[in-house]
Image 1 (tube, rainbow, N blue to C red):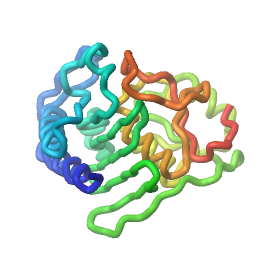
Image 2 (tube, rainbow, N blue to C red):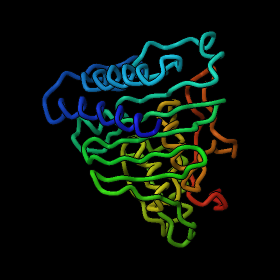
Image 3 (tube, rainbow, N blue to C red):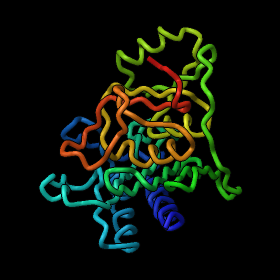
Image 4 (cartoon, rainbow, N blue to C red):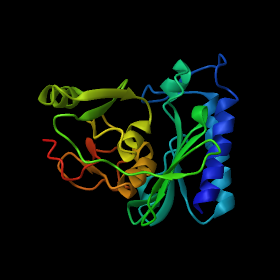
Length: 254
């Protein structure tokens, strides 16, 4: 299944890149976040591909009509999709936007694919099978987190969404290196051992985190809420609490 999902993500990436670097209209959604034709083209490509793969598995996509919890509550197995995570990065042409596809089973992300169209770069994982990275046509490589060194931390933060808890964390570790990045690539930096901590105290939605969470966990890290509970999916409200991603699960970040 993972290779088929990677192919679907790649096809969505091609749709996105067909608009990249061109002046296209930008709409505003109800939460004031941007929406482009590239988001919608990727959404339609992914939903069609997943339905072809198995039309019995429901799809929850950021760009689909909101599905009420009364319907979702019976879902034990479903796809969570962000057709283009980092639309602001797409508009700014930084290349830091991703296609996120996850399979959730029993509230847990059990398969995740994060694809970076501008770099032809894949990250993926399946529960119990490890996490991997592949650049272009090169061989895939297993990725692992690293042990945290409090004197030489690397803290990754959102370029557009760093809240007060992030500032407090940086003050607590003044020698830490900081990396700013868009989209779910922040999680992937932790998963491949290039960063130690990603604290997000500004809200995210389930489709922002599901694919990358599986990748982080299969590389040896954790994604939890700031009180230490594992992040679960198909909540009545799809908004996530504040979250902490650690490469080293034993690192006492507080």
